[in-house]
Amino acid sequence: MSDQIILANRFREVILNGTWIANTNFKNELETLDWEIATEKVHNLNTISILAQHIHYYINGIKQVFLGGNLEIRDAYSFDFPDIHSSEQWEHFLGRFWSDSEEFAILIEQMPEKQLNEDFVLEKYGTYLRNIEAMIEHSYYHLGQIVLIKKILNNRS
Image 1 (cartoon, rainbow, N blue to C red):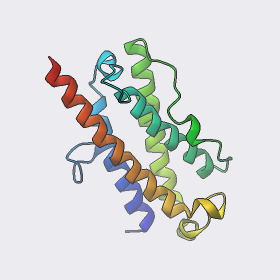
Image 2 (spheres, one colour; image 1 turned 90 degrees about the vertical axis):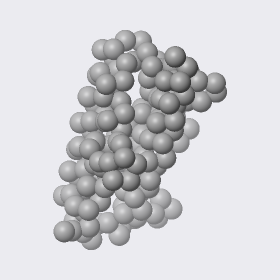
Image 3 (tube, rainbow, N blue to C red; image 1 turned 180 degrees about the vertical axis):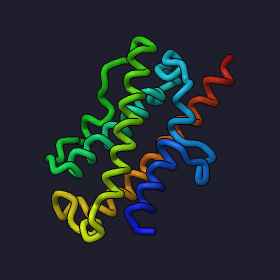
């Protein structure tokens, strides 16, 4: 199995379908979550919705580079999203999240092996491999936060 297939599968595990590392994934945690719970504030923590949108922001931004575009995402804007006010808005976001995530995984699978060790946009950003691995690790970090926030919210009732 190629490195690209392994990386794409690891990415899918955290976002779409895996249970090996965290015994859950984003889709499992969010797909049936009511929008009101996803947007409920707990103390000074980010909401579940904001955390999910944050991860999607990076997936979509890196995906644009994979497609030959510019790196337009900025850390300073990675938590700035319009509020979600309905189940339709929440479902629309989730649909984009799953679709962009699958496209991201497919682009990893299709990436020439040589490209994995090339600079990602600029040398200071590391290689494509480092950025893909960082996306996976970053996703697990925020998945853990989502699981904990859900537990806090469930214990309030």
